[in-house]
Structure formats: C-alpha cells, structure tokens
Length: 188
Length: 188
DNA sequence: ACTTTCGATGACAGTGACTGACATCGATCT
DNA sequence: AGATCGATGTCAGTCACTGTCATCGAAAGT
Image (cartoon, rainbow over all chains, first blue to last red; front, top):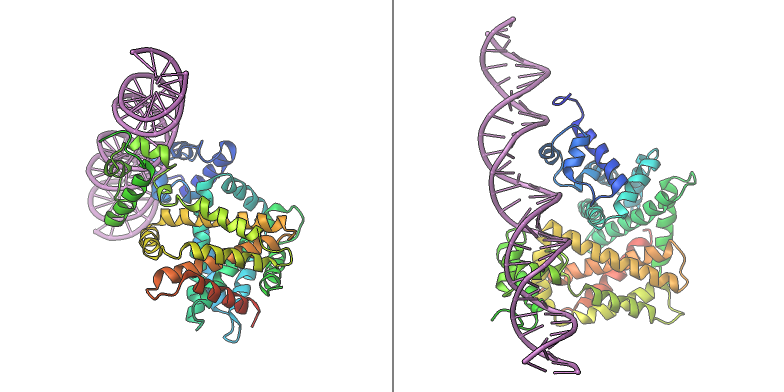
C-alpha cells in the first residue's frame, strides 16, 4: 500500500464525507480523514485549501456550466430568461444525485462553517452570472439583481428538492420557485 | 491601567477595525488586538466567539429591527410590501453611518473569511424574515423567496450606497433596487 | 537495463486561532 | 472588615494550516 495508490483526491473526499456524517464536522480531524484515505495530513492540504473545501470540489464545474449556459442564451432572451435557462441546465446535472446530495446537505446544514462556505460559493456563482449578464449588455443594478434572484431561486428549490423523497426532480422545484418569485415580486 | 477600564468590548471592536484596516485581517493576530485594547487574548474570546465576529457586533440589533418592522406591517400588506417597509426602516439606521460603513466594508470585502461571515449574517436575516412572513400566513415557497428577494435588494443597494460619495441615502438605493427587481422578474 | 527527471507524497517544525481550568482582582453588599 | 461575584489574567493544550526539505516511484530518455 502507501504511496501511488490512484485517486488520492477522491479517496480524501469520500473519507471526509463519511467521517463528517458519522461524527460530525467539528469532531473530525484532518489527520483522521487522511488516515482513512491512506495518506497524511500534509497531503490533504495539498489537495484541498482547508477542511471545508473537501466538500465543495465540484463547485467550479457547476459555475462553469451555469455561466456557459447563461451566456449561450439567444440575444433576444430577457435577462431572467437567460438565468432560467442556466437553472434548467444545472437541474439536469443533479438528476441522479439525489441520495448523494441529501447526505452531503445534511452534513453542511449541521455546521455553521460549512454553511458559510456554501453561501460564498453561491455568492461567487451570483457574481459570475451578473458578469455574464453585463457582457450581454444588461446594466446595473439589473444585472446583479437578476443574478441574485436566480441564485435565490436555486437555493430555495434545492432545499425543497433535497428534502423531498418523491420522484420530482430539481427542475420541477426550480420552475415552481421561479414562477412563485414572479408572483411575489409583482407587488400584490 | 489594566483591569476595570470600562467598555472593554467597544475597545476591542475599535482596535480590531483599526488593525484590520491598517495591515489586513490575516496579518493581524488576536493578541495584537487585545494588546491595543489593553487586554489579553483570552479576554477577547470572552467577548467575541472568534476573530471575525468582532466586526459583526450589531447584527442581532439589525435583525431585530428588520423582523419587528416586517411583523408590524398591516395585515393587508402584501409580503413584498412588508419586506419593503422593513428595508426602509433599516435604511434610516444607516443614515449617519456612511463613513463607518465604508471603512468596515472595505475590510470585509478584502477578505474571504469575513465575506463568508457577512453572508451567513444575511442568510440568518433572510431566515428570520421568512419566519415572520410564515407567521403572517404566507405559504412556502413564497415566504422564503420573498425574504431572499428582500435580502438581495438589501445587498445590492448597500453595495452601491457604500460605493457612492454623493449624498444619496441608503433608502434611495433600496427603492431603486426594489423597483428594478420588479422590472427584471416580470419576464421581459 | 541504467539513469535522469519530476510530480506526488512523507516527515517535521512552527504559527496562530481557540478552549478549558484555575487563580486573582476589584467593585459591591452586608 | 469580610464575603461575594463577575470580569480579567495565566497557563497549558489541541488542532487547522504552512514552509521546507527529503524521498519515493513512475515515465522518459539513453
């Protein structure tokens, strides 16, 4: 065993999720994660910036999908429509990940530091979307507000989707939330 | 000097803001903050849960104002109107704090950990507002979405207000952003 | 096959945030 | 004066995270 077993990064992610689930985030030390993965603490920090980041490995990919889909919307599309298209694309990615998402979200919700990290990932997403809208000619504050509204829809929809055991996909909750947001902001 | 000088908490807050401004958040140790305040590191942690929290002392007060104002809106008011009333009330609190807000925000924006903390404070606000709306009979997901939309408006407006040197108050930017949100979510 | 190269890992020492336990000060009450 | 009690100081300890250097092992070149 030892060095050169493949997939060190993935082993660390799995070990971390397991341990965070079993005993909680605070009660888990990085040394324990590394040990379960057959590595050392120092190697953990070569793969992940900190103890939280190991749970957020896919976020760059998600952001790239978000942005590229929004950017690919036809020029005629309203800002909110470009965001809606991006939300739909993202929803399909979570198609077969309900069980994993639920497990991961349970860990995150149970710890304030992890919630903070999740929030800044979503804020980064919002900033990237606002950038995309600005490049499409949308002025401020409309660009930032549309992006924030889109992320709000994602947050609420994701939360509801993770909590459900029915077969309804994330896309359903996203459409529901987006429609509801429109009703709610119309002012009466 | 030494023990029993009054206002230990306030001295710590001021020392922290000064040092974070001068050399940055990461380059400041808690021991240095405590020393400038004439106290010890251990005492710092008796007043504030961690190194970040010292910048967010007023957040409970702000949340209380937010919630009580929203709750006090007439029953006939639409959810978004109750939130708008709360936003207006909060804006008036920042009336004479532009210089201080700007200084504080400069520090926060410069550091990811501080941004995370700010985001979870805003998320806590959003959750409290959603609770208030639910108590007013607003169902989900409308309650959460309205609250999130309100916080989005606050975020964008606050950012613009802090960046301006004109005399326009936070209330101006809040009304501007709220109006723009309504336009942007209407779908075209 | 032998050597060289080079990225990934290990080993180790160090800093600083944060905590628990206990001692001490000083204002207030009796 | 003595008792009380909250706020502070002291000290030891854990753990996240970093810098540095040694070492391993695969792959490429000879």
